[in-house]
Image 1 (cartoon, rainbow, N blue to C red):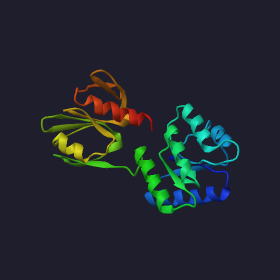
Image 2 (cartoon, helix red, strand yellow; image 1 turned 180 degrees about the vertical axis):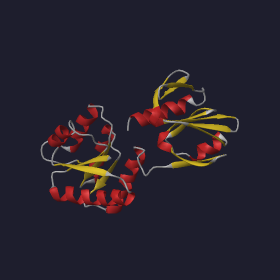
Image 3 (cartoon, helix red, strand yellow; image 1 turned 30 degrees about the vertical axis):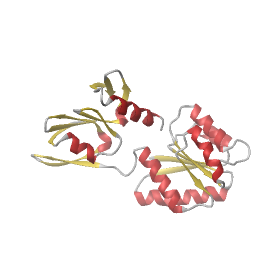
Image 4 (cartoon, one colour; image 1 turned 60 degrees about the vertical axis):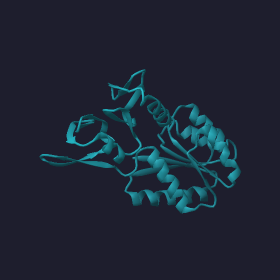
Length: 233
């Protein structure tokens, strides 16, 4: 279940935002829960007891303001997408220091909210499930990409290593790479790994779900950048 939070000291704005977000998620078929908070202190205390993947946070509130609350949350090392809500565009620059994903201006534009929401879902890799169809001798297999730890090739033969089994099919790894989302990164001329399962990048290897895979010198810079960005989400 996708867990979201809305923090604003004005109930009417919380209600409007919840309605717009809920409508969009229902249209996408995503199961969700939205929790409301009326100020920064309540938010910090509430998120000690519950999880949150996407936070819509008002900047200007009585007591603890949104930027201070965001700093406190980032200090806990919890990973979530923060989207600032404000009445004044000048405030959006304060979002950079706390790695805010985006901002929404009041009064609300439903299309803007939907667009920002989908950006957050994509960053979290929890958009509607994506699949890769593998053609094999016995027929076709529809494999959810979220379960694929990595792809490895041996000439024209590709192995998709998932959390529960391995699939073998014929494909060029470069052609496959062009079809995959950005969460799959090249680490070697024979390997594409899913950042979701990447645990560490070492001198010439990468640890993917506990398994060490080779990293080529040419792929190392791009892999390090992609891994750092993913860890900051």
